[in-house]
Every structure is written in C-alpha cells, then in structure tokens.
Amino acid sequence: MKELELKYGCNPNQKPAKIYMKKGELPIEILNGKPGYINLLDAFNSWQLVIELKKATGLPAAASFKHVSPAGAAVAVPLDDTLKQMYFVEGIELTDVATAYIRARGADRMSSYGDFAALSDECDEQTASFLAREVSDGIIAPSYSPKALEILKSKRKGSYLVIKMDPDYIPEPQETKDVFGITFEQGRNNAEITDELLKNIPTVNKNIPDSAKRDLLISLITLKYTQSNSVCYVKDGQAIGIGAGQQSRIHCTRLAGNKADIWFLRQNPKVLALPFKEELKRADRDNAIDVYISDDYDDVLREGEWQKIFTKRPEPLTREEKKEWLKNLSGVSLGSDAFFPFGDNIERARRSGVEYVAQAGGSIRDDNVIETCDRYNMAMAFTGLRLFHH
Image (tube, rainbow, N blue to C red; front, side):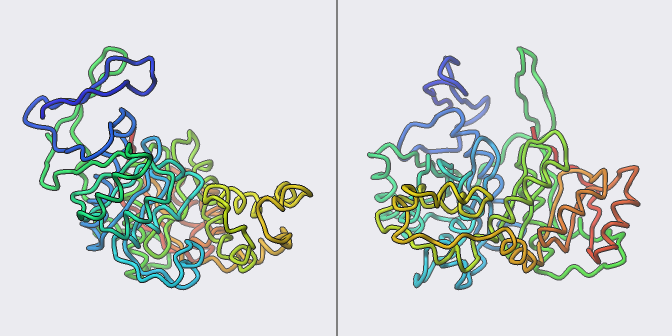
C-alpha cells in the first residue's frame, strides 16, 4: 500500500487528506479502525520515541501521546507496592510491556485521557486488557498476540485504532513538509542519545549514578519528540512531568515541575486511602484526585458533591501537609531540550526533588546556572546537543 486516504486533516474542514510514500510501501498495517491525521502524527512520533528508549536502555518501552507530544513515557522498571496501589494494579503480576505502559499512562493521567499508545515490543494480552479500560484513541506496536488483538478490536464498539508497525522500516535521511505552500527540507534528527552525552560535567558534584544516567537518557529521548520549548522530569524509569510547547523555558520548568509534584502527591497516604465509590468511572476518579490535591479541594468536598464520588467524606490534604510531603521527593533527573538561560530553572527544579540535570549548555549565563546547581549539590551535564522539535 503506497497511500492511505484519511477522513480529514487536523480539522474537519481540511479535506482531502491522505498519507503516502514517495518511494516504496507504507510501513504500517491497519489491523482495526480508521486512522485520522492527528492519530498518525501521534503514532509515528511515539513509535520513534519508544524504539529509541528501548535501544538506549535495553528495556521494553511505552509512551502515551496527545497532540504530537508525550503525556508520559517509560521503560519497564518494576513497580513498588506504593506505585502499584497508585496505578490500581495491586496484587497483579505484571509483564514488562504492561509495566512500561502503566508507568507511561500513570505519569499524567489527566493529559493521557484519550491518548495514543505506543509499545516497543509486542502487545500482550495483559497490556491490551489494561488499555481496554482506558479512554484511548489507538495504539501502535510491532505486533500483537492473538488474544491482545481480539481484546483491542472489541474496544470502542469495534472502532479502536490498531496499527502494526514494520520494525525494520528505515526512513529517508531527508524529510520535507509544506507550510503555507512552501516546502521545507532538512536532514532527519538522527542524533543518537547515549551516555557519551553525559560526560561533560561542569558542576562540583560530578557523581551521576547509573540509575540517574538511565533517567537522564529517558528525559532527553522524550524531549526529542516533544514540542519545544520543553523539559522533562524523570524518576525510576518514567517521566513524571513533561512541560511542552512553552515560549519561555521557565514556564516549561514550572509546568513540568507542577506535574511532577502532582505525581508524587498522588502517593500520599491520604490520597491512596480516598474512599471512592466502586462504580465511579476511572476518568471521574482521576479528576477527583486532581481536584483533591489542588488548592481547590473544597470544590470536591462541598456538600452534595462528595457523596457522588466517595463513600464517606475524606479529610482534606492541607497545604502544610502537601508542603511537608513534597520534601520527600528526591533523586529526580531533569532534561532540557536546549540550554537553561537562567538559574531560576534550577531553583524551581530543586523544589521537585531534582538532583541530576542534562542540558545543552552554551548560554552566556552558563556560569550562573552552574553556580546555582553547586549551591544545591546537583550534578549537571552539558550535552552540547539541542533537541528542538517542531
């Protein structure tokens, strides 16, 4: 198949729409559903991300994509008991690929609502079963077990999009796109992200343990496929906060840091013990958790509302309790797709447990950024590699 007709482009008024190959056949097979323009943008970007994550770490990888940026990305690092409870998979023996997707989806469940999933490895029955209960638009993977395919084909009244990707496909070295009738051409971003990028450490603290190196690589590879400006906080093999598409880098750092804080606050015993009604839908539960954690928790606890969500009225998680809890967040790695222009990014990152940083370097204020890292005993690598993605 050399081309595939689509219902419309980014918006319903943008017709006709299709994808096609200038040379050879399309590297995908549509096993179920009908793809849309944005579906395929998410599919192809997320596929590149998970393949690079697996190559860099040797672990099965997954991503949860929304509007051409990842809401979450992760590799198959086993979940501890707290994370299993937080991700609602207590008492379940998880496969590696299921673990990776649960981590990716769990990074930012609000943003992952209606996501496009990507897996580096075959989608097994367990992963398909988890996907079946989530609000998701589609999935791309190199293969599917027969039972997994059966489960996914029954999702969304049989319309769930399932794409099989040729793992041996290698794109042309030059890529083009048209903007306003004008064709742009550039070489593909084939920069390989490896430990070599983490060797230039200008800070006093030069100790970056292997687990942090893995997490820094995850952050940088994630940023390679995130709309710029962007930063990514990573802990224990998964993104916990991604700030995408902001004009100011400090806004990226704040946005992603706030997401990382929410991820960690969800592990607070009060949040884990919230007495949800059994029949409550997953999306409604996630919304309630987000409001409960926020400073607007009175909205979810006001009379007449909490009874719809909880079996009994939960105690509030106070601002002081949240502040104390967040002091326990540590060992976080932070990547940036370009240099940090000011030390304020490091100041904000420190509040979300960041101890390791990887950024391009090259700012006229590098000395200020290094000095700020040294103040908090952070180890920072200058990669010399910019990762803008537009």
